[in-house]
Length: 189
Length: 223
Image (cartoon, rainbow over all chains, first blue to last red; front, top):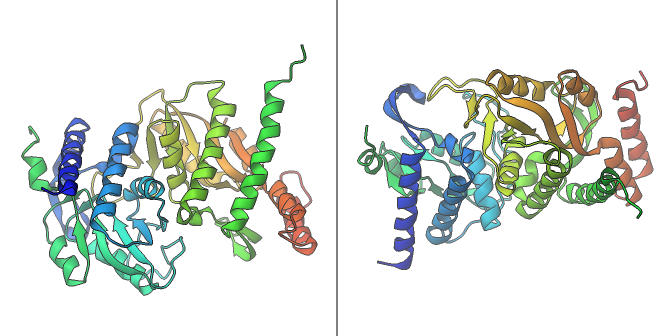
């Protein structure tokens, strides 16, 4: 096993124990966007309320980016849940974070981008969870329209609901630590 | 033995830090001149845009250290605090990094309740009786911060302090005081423009224009 894969496994194990200890997985019937619903919801918004765990998660994002993404000029986070993670990861890597507003309903003419993008900037999109991949694609297309080059997205957990395929068709590699099923296997409920 | 009151030492230090911050903000283009419509509908000849700060992580980190200085010297020296709250969007990256340095748990209030997922308006943990310090970028009238503070209070938080980098001096301090919130800021907008003029970063004409606006809109100022 390569050095990075060993580190990746360690991060994945730490993430799993944070997910279990902080009760990140909520069971119920949750409406997701686009008419989808789910029995298990992952609430990573709780993590910043635990400073040590938050630091560990940012370190995990930073290592994932350092080891799996060769070139980057900036990163962005999907609002709101990824804003704290993007901020923490950006200062760790000393890579600019292009602050992005929550994307409002379609047809809004206001740009949700607040940071500086130069034409040709290679930008990595950061989010907590990937499902269908539609939100990540939407963010990617906005960044691309502004001259950004988007080839990578990083998440903590992939729900395996098609994001991998949808993104790769658009030339974007999805990087993640855990699949939802690996988490559910460890949850006692 | 000669003893100098602690507050005077801190205020002296704060004015030096404010000059440093003014330079950094100017350097990244966070201070813009032109014709801007504020969220209140008021027209302003200048705009302070701290949403670009995360594009400059080293500068953001330094400014976050200044927030922490304010919190340590004006709040934590008098009372215990349990949580830091950020106001999305601009205030949230700042509050996040503040919460990591101190360190304290972070929470934030959504602008409006979302329609899916867990349908929460406060994200993060808050317990009844927690002393929460709210962090934002800039204060104008204070109305938007007050909305968020009311939500935190409804959830049982004890909120007595709002910390910002710049007070635009348009009645925010007074409006917040009416709701028993103490406003803490690194500098008032008039000080910022004075520092910039003294460093020849803005000319006399620009300075006069913005100061006229500041004087007109400050509480008890020219009407």
